[in-house]
Image 1 (cartoon, one colour):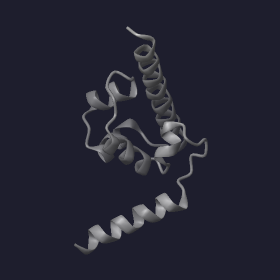
Image 2 (cartoon, rainbow, N blue to C red):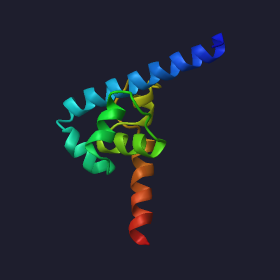
Image 3 (cartoon, one colour):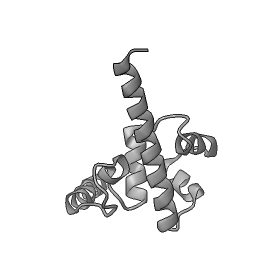
Length: 104
């Protein structure tokens, strides 16, 4: 395996571990069970477990759902920021999306 590929793989595994560590911490701090998170995401117990243990990757849609369910941002989950509170922009965008969906 070339250095570029192995570096990418290591970065990918590091990001996956970071995301899953932050999800576990937020589950604890938000007093949410894995069962409740599964319900938000419509995932089976096996799928959620495999994702949280890093055996399979999250989709963008799933991470977005995780962020909404745990009241955080994609930026926090991915390590872009260390502030777990969602930004005003994210919260406003979610509210506007919800409003437009409810109108239809």
